[in-house]
Length: 224
Image 1 (cartoon, rainbow, N blue to C red):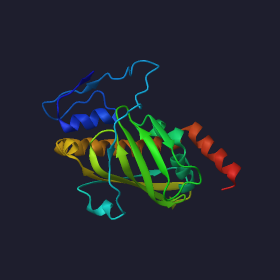
Image 2: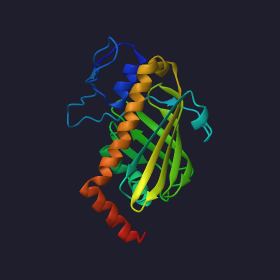
Image 3: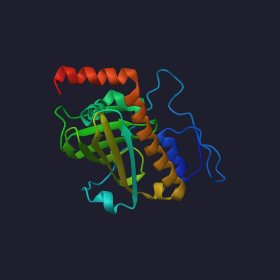
Image 4: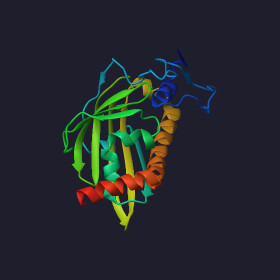
């Protein structure tokens, strides 16, 4: 069962995996128990509905109705951070709310590559329209399992700022549907918080001993 009103911001919160939220409005909490999420056999990413999203170009990051940009520095080389991005299994470990990532194109990845990402109540299909190996990539959504956006694009930029240190700039641009627009400033605050936490999550993930060892071993094997 899902317990929330028709407020758009609450729908975004539930889709993103936030099950207990103190709202800055009269709405106090949103709580979800769906598809047997408390069961070990649950598969919250099994979603049948699909709502198409239209493609965009790089200029969308400057013109979209909703735009977000966050940056953080991490203790790793750009190529090492990019390797984390290419590893589908790593995403749930550092990006709060992501449950599963599957690349639906074969390596080597590049322009035209596709991917599907699952959140507790939301799945999205992505198409990569920019790919600069070890430096940058951008994608737009082709479909989503909830009617939240007409278009959404993300840009991941890695810049070498010092030996062994990288600045990650994370940009997201959205053309919302009515469901998301209804959330107003609350929805914007929630989305910005989710993205900022993702940056912090990556920063912490890079510092973990297991991740550093795995990345170093990968690059020793490839000779990068």
